[in-house]
Image (cartoon, rainbow, N blue to C red; front, top):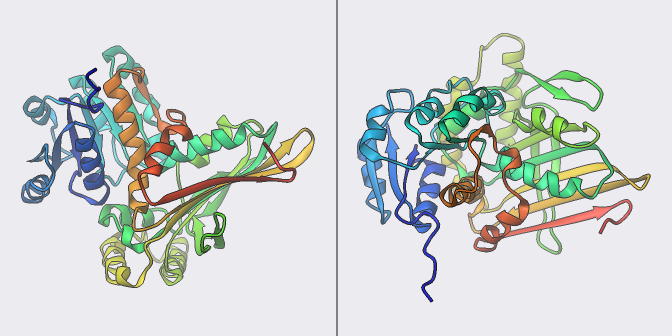
Length: 380
């Protein structure tokens, strides 16, 4: 019997920012799934040079802020994935162009307003029969899948705490640095379980301990960051829980530097730390040789079951430098489902599109361990 081919065999996909930190990893994964990948970016030489290293890829020049019509006419893709960013403050020009051209759309966005507002395109996407999914990345796609699996163990959830700490070897690019700095020192609305209140970005420092079994523990400093989950999870989880998402680099001195400078923004001495993004990016690259190759993510829920206080925690630890693969896994999975015709048309965030079980085969191919621990009382 003939074995089925890769899920994307013979189909064409454009990856905007396809030679960047995350875009390049995604492009390689998509070619492995049989897609014909068009690596697109503003720098044609970089796009072509990277594409030459990836069988089944080609490089072309494209600007996500420009007219994408000629790109669609030239490439004739089934799908476009925006891995360029930054998405904070970005318009919906790219997904709108995809809807007009009848091309499915995914992005790796983590910008709260961008991801949570994508539903404004839902009616147009449905009429056009186009799938438009924003946030096909660690947040809210993976985080949402984890929260749903853990929440099934509770009658009601009161608190959700999420944290990510990446090795400096996971440096993705200046656009990611700009995203990180965009809300430093700025007020962020958070739901505390009773009401919305404003807290300041890159504050609420805490030491997060990531542990799985007998593996060496990671102890990293993390701080409050702005992600779509802050708006999405209180609406989707029984009990309207308080939600707090923290993140941080491997080295505490880098986080403390951002924390200190965030006061300058809050006091009005600086408008934003975004102009410092190239410096932060260079600093991460300069210190990468000092760091480990370990990254981690944790999601903890507290609430009640059968009237008793309960807690459940999911932890992921990536080793051997595989941490940067995690943010692109959701896009790979959704690309497979779009190729299979199992994703309905319409525009929405990726927080309810995938299950944790769908991620696990991809985790198993990498140096990634993940586990759920439940307590108070022990939950099955």
